Amino acid sequence: MSAVDRLVEAQTKNKSMICLGLDLDPRKMPADYNKSLKGMYDFAHRVIEATSDVVCAYKPNMAFYESHGPEGLSLLKWLVEQIPENISIIIDGKRGDIGNTASQYAEALFKKYRADWVTLNPYMGYDSLRPFLEYKDRGIFVLCLTSNSGSKDFQRLLIDGKPLYQVVAEKVAFWNKDDACGLVVGATQPEQLKEIRELAGSMALLIPGVGAQGGSLEKAALFGTDGFKKPAVINVSRSVLYASKESDFADRARAELIRLNSIVEKVRVDGLPPETEEAPKHDQPANETPKTEAPVATPPQEVPQQGSSEVANQQQPDRQPDNSQHNPDRGTDSPHS
Image (cartoon, rainbow, N blue to C red; front, side, top):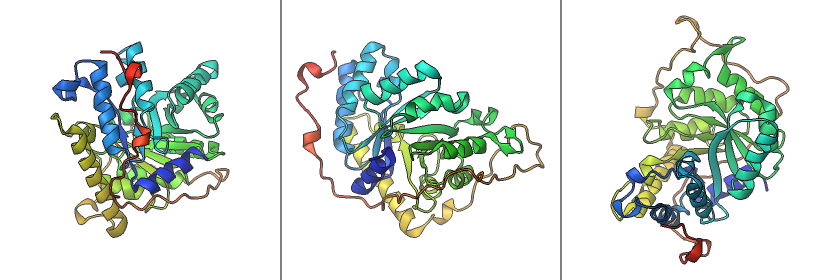
């Protein structure tokens, strides 16, 4: 089964297109959990136990583990082992190198850290992605148009009359021979999200920027899936992971995810609410004059036509935790204090 098929299967089973980012920041954790790596492990493990039936994926960002040195990487390995097999793991490292270096990155992320998907930077071209695509049952999310304000520095530059992010979308669509490619597109730029969704064909989109960054969940869900006809994953992190600094943090995280799933389901059934229908204005591309409007690119003829995957209907299930996926007695396998 391909990575995108497993992702859609998880969305169908859990009736959720939400991915929870596991970006562990001790400063935001309850006091009882922020003093050691073991405390951080216990915090994240409790969140996973409480939420694994209401998400489709988890996304650890490597920086939050690498910053703790070798022990932090051990923490990441222990955590991914607690994620149920049916839930996709997206390792967010934004790797981008060539040759043997890329091969080593791919082996580490796919084999050592159990990643189903990884995020990659396309700046060095196809040969920086190819070693990851050799893993036929795994997937890659390629940076296309990001949520940060600095995206205009390069991603909006005009290349032969079209923004660079459109060129990236077209290239990755052409490289998507085995249905293993996807794109990262920020929720803070909904009009461009619609453009990229059209260029992406059937590729899955990873959509960060909802929640603390201010992106619209409703627009991300509707535009990112082309009306719930194509696969997309909406990432949330801080607004859910740190919904409470009290002992009820895991229950509060679960409740927030249930709320987000219900919003997506309402959009699926009723469309956008009136207050979100007016599209915000967006910045001009960085090297475009104020009166010039960048043309919308059409996909090149050589871009293969992919079969579309249905995104799961977004209805909230009753919680039915699978206790067999978790090991409460971790013994010597637990992180050290």
